[in-house]
Structure formats: structure tokens, C-alpha cells
Image (cartoon, rainbow, N blue to C red; front, side):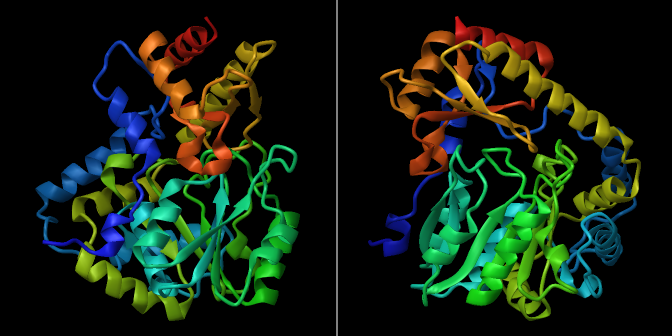
Length: 378
């Protein structure tokens, strides 16, 4: 019996590979996981419990609960400045990844090319491959502040190119695209007539004050497809709630992929998300400040060591250069896990240009982070 050709050629996630190697080991300092160390807030958990007790356990509409969509529309307009005409252009998804997957499947045909950042989240490549599209990579470099170069992107776009993926704040780099650069990138994509798929799942974790949603550059969503998540910002990774702001012509194609794949998002979890987006927001500032302090702790500790780092402006990762250690990134992380019981993610999990680097997560306790860095430097 044969599998499909596509199944045989699907890459696996390098991020998940390292997580699985370190899974369940209490003696390991876990700095490999892209997951907030904070618990989901009590009022959010209580909202889900209350919804279940009140019988809200049946199917929800595929686009999402109307009251949640309305709240998200308000957030997109007031916080992200994306002028969504109405909640009919906001779709709730099973995490940000589910939204991205449905978007890729709605704009890509087999043989199309899509521009993806390298280093960048490996799932972008996996999603493109799933639909028979061809990933093309634009390189992010230390010299360029790990920011997209509009000229490079313009040169890579050809007649086969359907979309450009942007990710700000970036996973794994922590770089944040400022307004002036966002405007230049938008102009390039408009001139070349390609979609912009903007992954903004870390939108609430910006240290620089420079973050801008590229969708805010339009009077309403037309070219830009913006994807968000509750996972990172609200410490709700396991709840699997994401959402997207869509141009009108993309809404139905996205829904026709969500219907046969997930049908609808977990109903009590949607009530939890509603509580998160409409409830207190002050604690998000406290969390962001703790991530910033964790970042500064790492940068101070590695100062003068063989390791160097890009200073992240957002998200909760530090992109470390391993220097001239004589090992590949993957060999380095496996040896570090084996010899010093510290788990990091190899840079090559985020693309070929990640070689010579590792990703370190700041989303843990201060004591655990300090212990992990001490073991790394020992």
C-alpha cells in the first residue's frame, strides 16, 4: 500500500524534535520551549469552567462565537489599527497555526512560490509543502538587524509568487519591523501584486515601542492577511485559540478549509478567550517587563563569553551565536543536553541560515534561566 508523494516529502519540525528529546526530564533546564512560563490567568480559566457548567459545550459556529468575533474586531481596530469593516471578516481558529494553514491553502496553488523568512518558523515551510507550493527564502542577517530587506524581496518575486510571509515580532529572532520598513515592504508587495501574510502572534510582546501591524497601512483588509493568537500573549498555548483579519474574498475559502478540518473551535475555550480579550490587561505589561528583564539577564551573563546574541526587541527568545565551537547547531544542542542538562533549540530548526546559532527561550522563571545560562557557560 502506498502513501501520497506529498506525505513522503513532508519535513518534520526541528523545534518539536528537541522538545521530544528533553521531554519529561526533571534534571534538565528547559529553555527550548516557545511557551509562556506564566499560568493562564485565573479569570480566564474561570470563564471556561463557567461556560462548561452553563452548558456551553455544543458546536460553535465555524467562524467563531459572535460575541468573541465582535470583541476581536474591536481589539483589531483599537490596538492593531487594522480597520476591519465588521466581524464577518474576523475568523476564530484552532490556534494561530490553524489560521495560517487555512490561509496558505486559500491563496496557494500547487507550483506557486511563497517567500518565507530564513531564519523563520519552520511551520511556514511545512504548510507551503502541504499544498504543493514552493517555498523561496529571503535571508535575515545580523548585519541587517534580522529585518526583511525590501530590495531582496522584490528581486525574489517572480511570476510564480503568490505571497510574502512577514513575522513581527519574529520567532526565533525577536526582531520587530518598524513602521517605515513596513511601509516599504507593503509598497513592494503592492507593486508586485502579491499577498502579504503577516504572522503577528507575538503582537503584545514588544519591548521597542516600534511594532506596527502591517494591515494598519490599508484602509481595510485587501492585500494583507493578519494572523494572531492567544497562545503567546495570554499564556494560552494549550487552549488552541487564534484568529485572523481577512480580506473579504479570503473569508469563505478559509472557512471551507476549517469546516472539514476542525469544524469549529472548542466552545468553552472561546469563552475563555472572550474573558481574556475583554478582561483586565494590566498583567500583560507586567509579563512583558519580566520577559525584558529575563532578556537583560541573559545578555549580561553572556557578556565577555564566547557567545554573542542579537538583542531582541520583542517576543521571548534570544538568538545566540555559538561561535567557533567546531559543532553544528544540532550537534551543539544535543551535546549541551547530554553533558550539561540544558535544552536549547538548534538554529537550523528555523532554516539553513540558522546554522551556527541556537534559540533560547526567556519564558521561564528567573532562577531557572540563570541556572541554565550558568550551565551553558560552565
